Length: 125
Image 1: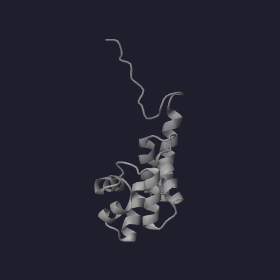
Image 2: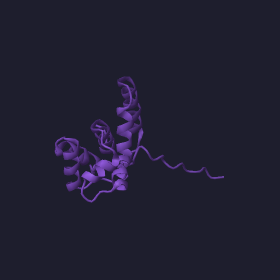
Image 3: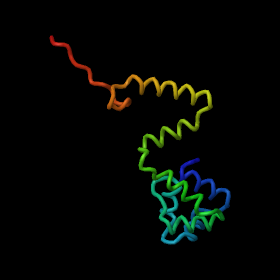
Image 4: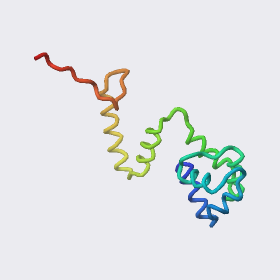
């Protein structure tokens, strides 16, 4: 599932609406606000999601599912970026990446994040 901003860009293009036309259809949203949503810089509110769904002719639930995924508190920004990069890979590349990640995780000391290198101690001179 693409991020909310990508979904909004696709729906805007498919609907043929300009940014200005879309901004006019959304309460409390100007062109700058709509552009920020399309770039993924900010997120629309509940009322704005409903208006976006009406403007695009799609169920609000589809956009809310995207929003919920974007706001998943269990995932950090880095995890969202990693997932997006993973989804862009071929199945073969995904398998290779998973092998590397599992190897890194298996080699990490317990309780320590595999992404943080273990500090090396200096030998006495």
